[in-house]
Image 1 (cartoon, rainbow, N blue to C red):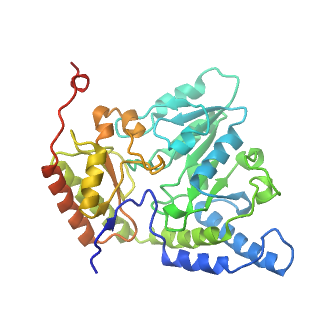
Image 2: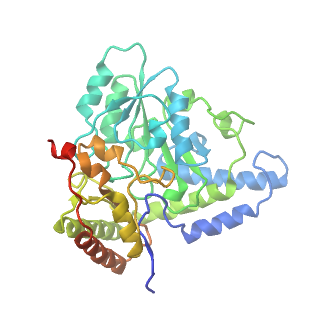
Image 3: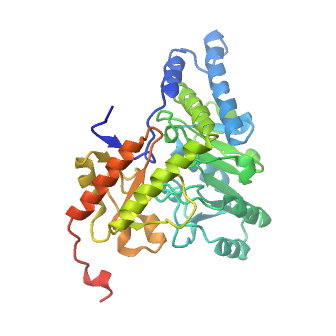
Length: 381
């Protein structure tokens, strides 16, 4: 059945998986508080701990080192504030605003494809400094999909006595994510990014972080004292079910290849009509394309594609609905293109006919929208 309006903004939020919605409804019928000791409380606790065990097993840590949060933003804040106390914070230039806003950080530059400069990171870690460091490096970028060399960064960090926090919000459920294999000290995930419902995330811990994490939100001793507040049981149960299905689907190499093929087909068609593929030379998420159309403002492209029946974005969905110039593309040195790029992120529900329809819509938009004249400043005059 053909859909009238097609959602290609999965990096903002994936469509909920049916198994996640079913789990949410079941958990919502459990009346107890997981902290209560009576029968209803024990039933709620069983739902919570089952979800914790599954998430820990899927993403490479022990259940007691899986801290439930309200989402990726809180998980990142808890890591940066809870591990960064007394440490200097270093963050890549393309980190999500949730990390950028959590602390004043020294910025690690990236190359033209958005890949962190490990040589510069090593130099920064080796600088004389009375405090050890906390390094923040996302596993996959939310705007261009670039996958970072996290395992190599972890080895550098530990050689210099630094901790490494990884924002894996966009990576979880789309590529293999294992905290132990990456060698990081903490890792953030968010349920609605892989087909859960909004309102639940987790911070996974390893090594020294398991002993030194300080709570940001104190309360009644929940989450072993690491995060206060009654957990959002329906959203947590949905997150665990969605994670099982999303991670399980990664074992199907053919499905992953199909998604990457659709990404590449969209990118090739766009480049053929004058677009620039941002970060196109890097290893990227199979579902994510960043396309800059010179001379056409991102907001104008979004409106044109929305009217043509497609929902895409101009980057992060955390700017109160505003279309702003991308700090990620700025950090990649793309100049005016930073305000002329859209993000196409394919959800798990994507069909081939929808990809073909999008290619037609993009071609028509590129032909129809007039390119604006460059300003004197942009032209270098």
